[in-house]
Figure 1 (cartoon, rainbow, N blue to C red):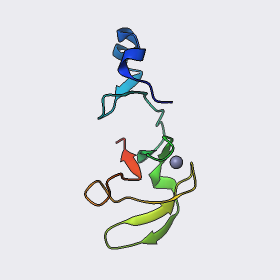
Figure 2: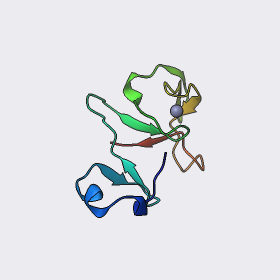
Figure 3: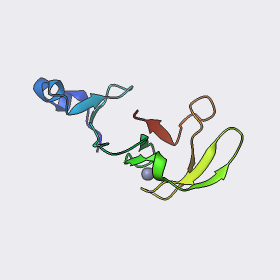
Figure 4: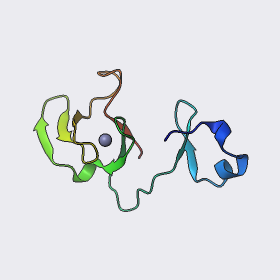
Length: 91
Ligand SMILES: [Zn+2]
């Protein structure tokens, strides 16, 4: 569940457990230990390692794979191509 900045006391933010995303929302910092290319799924908000997914198709401008969290066909095209990219890079 997404929480807004005002839901948290200042010290929780300062202790570094939360990050502010580009919309100004606070999100709990994900545990990306051991992940090579951690990304956040913009469909269901899960974090996964895009380095371990099975690529199902490769095109000249992008690769496609099934997201391990919500099992959608997603690709790595960025905001230039899609108004809402399928993943948000965390690295
Ligand atoms: Zn997902």
